[in-house]
Length: 426
RNA sequence: GGAGAGGUGGCCGAGUGGUUGAAGGCGCACGCCUGGAAAGCGUGUAUACUCCUAAAGGGUAUCGCGGGUUCGAAUCCCGCUCUCUCCGCCA
Image 1 (cartoon, rainbow, N blue to C red):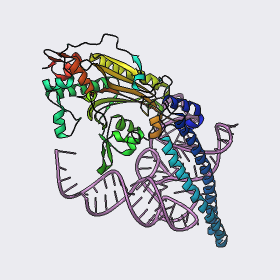
Image 2: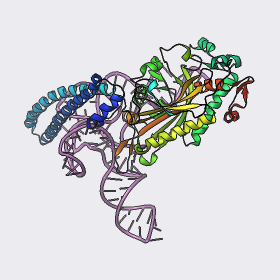
Image 3: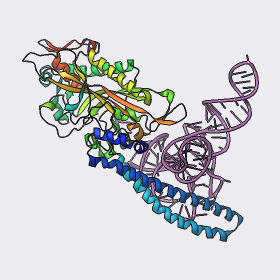
Image 4: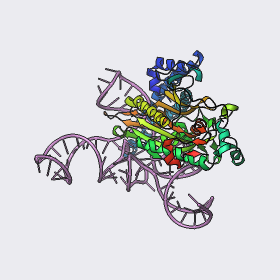
């Protein structure tokens, strides 16, 4: 969430940012509410502190008097303390209430978009940051969508997933399973080569962790919840991996921190239907390799560019046509300041599929999770957090199957062949 | 799941009602010493909120979390939680 100080000192900037997120004038009123609550909070706090200070001083006096045996004098002071105490209880209640109201309001305010974020309301308003520079592949008329290819070559089975679990839980088989594993290893090796430490995190997290990265409270409905143990299945490795550094104060020399993790990701994604969610286009469980970085505020945007280069390199080597979008204010996630989406072209469906989302959260997450570093002048400052998919597997598989289909089978990109151990799925 | 023990600062560890934000030690930083280093000596070494134009400095809170007793709680009482040990179960 945004820092109170920041809102207090940059009210206009905040309002401007929220307008870019298409807040109505009425909705913008939340900022004024926050400032008023904050004012109440500080006034109350000051009053309470003064009162407690008085109480502490008097108590000390009582102690001294008792030691000297002046019991009557002590009793007189006790009465004074009792009065202060009663007043303090009222103030304390007010303070607690004010604080929780303030938090509730703050949780409703999304991150302020970076100045480069385009104005817009829907995905149609996203800016094509980097278009595919070549002609898009054109397949013969009898080319099959990936869910047909999956059946033909026994790559994955969604009906079987229904039997075992429910809709949206694919079962990969044979060379399909092998391909999945190959992609994971390829992505992890690339991340390791780029200096990311490999992490294997838990696949379930507690509410504190989910709150810190922003899944709670705004995206609660997206996560699977294990009620019996009060745990959430992770929707992305971002959650456990970033939370490794929750409540940590780093030395400036520890930065940057780079981590990567492969995990399955679980998403409920309720309410969608139709052709655009067929096959692997949208599933409840998919594999993903994530990269996470903790950066000095001065170079987090440089880091974001490095991440774009990294993801581009993966797609180049997989020989998939892709484009990069800069998300508009209306399409950007709640916690992000700037997000680039990568989309690959799936030739049989003739549509673009999102396979990666690379974001800079600046201090929005680190403020919630108290992730800081000690700078040169011994000041504790919030770290910038970033993450990106590198990459999300299911849709990559969809595109690979469709784009690489030939009469003789599915051709495996050269760079994956050492990982798959085969050149074709046939 | 059953039984027991325990959660104090970066770490170890003292502390059963009164200048204890917390002894002592280690670590770390700076200084002195040294040709240089080690040893030694000295000084310093939490976080949040807040007051002050800023610095300096001050106030309040924090000894797992929440509540209670008390003029006053790290210290007493209650609830919760986590960790460890033993037993049970188990990949």
